[in-house]
Image (cartoon, rainbow, N blue to C red; front, side, top):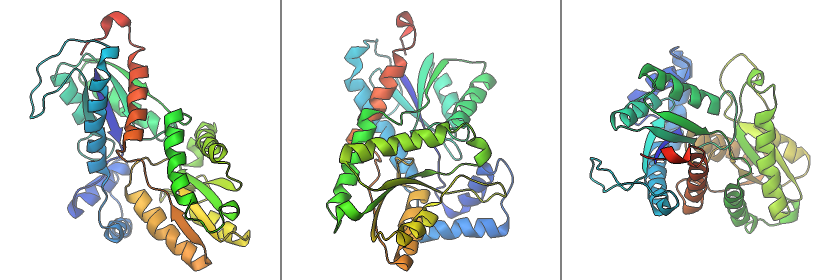
Length: 323
């Protein structure tokens, strides 16, 4: 069993920020002002742990899949590397930095992979997100002559394990509230351009996740807000989380719990947009803002990824399930 685990990617050093930003902008170098702004954001948070978290997810997912392999018995094969690998192998490919998705696909082809399941560490589908990951994989496969079959987990907004993991983290913050019944619970995800959200699928999936968590915990006051909108002239979906905090204050709320349901892993958009910018907005408004901890590489989230991969792998023709 072969898996391609994909994430957004992040630069490791300051000198990598400009080429990383250029890749995000589809090859258009950022202006000096935009580059300085992004560098300042990284300076404020220290550094993004996204790459380390993604590789930790891959290692733990591989172990979890190997533990589950009696479900799909397959012959062992020799594989180079310091670890002894079982029949499951997880590769990492990121969208905007090394190891790029194309680099991971090439490594898989060189290893003789014949079929693989892809999963993105992002639960909600949009043409701006998951569809772009699929496109990058298919472009890489086409450039290599389609060396292996590929299936992609497209979304999991209502996966029971995912909802339970989020609910447990909200519950941790609920106990810290002075008046839980009078607090506002905000669920956030990455904003996307309005033109990419016209079908409403992305917004509906994010709201479905929020609604299930709210229902599970019996939350009285909850809403969805958006964050991390791009610096482009086109309009992006809202309300922005800072705008929603403004309205929360005007509605008489004094405490807000924010949960980044669209961001399983800690990274720039979580640390800067929520822990820095939104916290500053809340302080200015006299709001007490609590953020739930991220899923990262915790066992409950790894269990969700394992289940998603096994379900997708089972859709390959039964007689062809082999490494």
